Length: 406
Image (cartoon, rainbow, N blue to C red):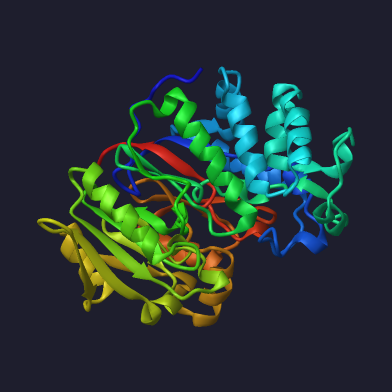
């Protein structure tokens, strides 16, 4: 069982000491051309190469001092606890909305009797109808109508984007309510890990998976111990931000403000971190096409209630004010709007800082990587031909749980 680490993330750039990852696996092998859209993928990945690329990413993090925790290992630690396995299986089946109580019982018994590693695999890779013995269950109208569906539980191929289902903020955690039906189980798994794993003992909960509206970790950036930025996007709704803010100000003593960045609700701008990330004390990378389109708001703590205001200043000026330092916005694509748009599709601004001024990026974004180097940022490139097919970069693939305080 993993020991408690003293988890804390008070910036985007402190030395990365511990991180949660998920290595792509069998769930990727279950993507088919007719399920790509509902699974939020653009193409079918070559799984073996994808795993090689992800292993290379993990190796970079390890080589720079980060301890890696894999989701499967965290689940393996806790599912043998009394009742833990049964609780998670039931939650997952309830979320699948099979609308047949005898089928739900049958599926529960099937999963509950599997070996531990097979249970974990099924929770992530899904369960096909062919894998479950028919038993004595009664067919309903819903079963007949859905007879062409291949799965009782769909695979969750987006789980390798570990940034989204949960995020550490200070010494607290926010578990996401995922926007898409295809990703709901990711939040459920992370909530279960939070509730049962000693790694998160005494970790306050800012947001729970049970929220009625969505919020995802890719929209949450911890700029400092006093300032959080949150994207109001396709995946993160304004009511969720308000609930998050209320709890965050109650929980985090040093928090002074939350900057809300409203971005267009487009596939290429799905989260704030797909267009804007912090790379050093005084440097941010940004997709230039987004700058004239964003709207800024600030949430702060009033005497008896939260205060909301429209920010009329430019993003760079606001950042300079709250971070108390001159700011450079490093525009992706090397100043060429066509190159910037092309590399934006390949997550050029979704950088992962592993130390101040040291970032991990995709190697394919050559122009954006070069402009980062021009600003004095050390760029560590990783292979990406298959990882990119899910539309997410190095930041998307990582959930930092401990960074050095800067």
